[in-house]
Length: 238
Image (cartoon, rainbow, N blue to C red; front, side):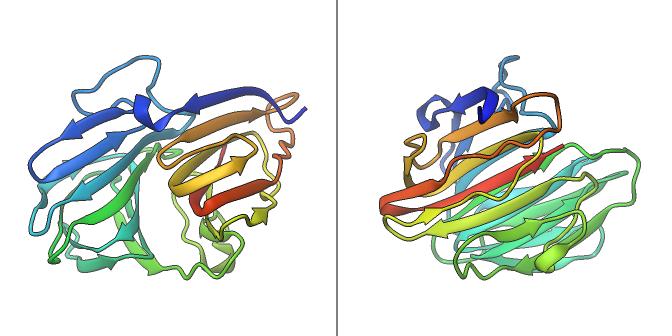
């Protein structure tokens, strides 16, 4: 048996925030959207799929004691923070910010077209750490591309939690074996669709816990992209 429990989060059932400059879909409770049944999945606290209008964005605002990961999907985002960083995050790049004891930052779409990103919050293993910032480009060459890894294997970044994160972009009809996973995992669709094994569409999320005792292996079935292809994130959670 592949898993003892499966948590499915259809895209249309996510929380939705619509402003004149922001179209945001929240997989879990966020801001004014609150549901005690959807407070996260393990240490995974937030997955927001944001589309930001040109010239607009999030002004300076604070965070603390949270690992914040931004996966840039389309366009560009201009980042500034209280640590002195002023960077441009472009499609294909990933930003990792450890808020720790406190950081103030802004994220503004400085381009001429709307930009799209996934913002992810993960609870750190310990609080009160020093704030830190990092961003890197990742080329999707086929198969699984490591974005987060505690040992920084294959050029991945590390956060203050033993979480692994992969991204895969599948061609139409392509089949891909998932990596060997332990414990809990979450799959988030960025674009396209998976025909097998779960029939997931853009924006859908799926979490599972390994069969047997906590920490035992959870061999997921092969993933097969639809005729539209598929772009997805896969989390290994502790």
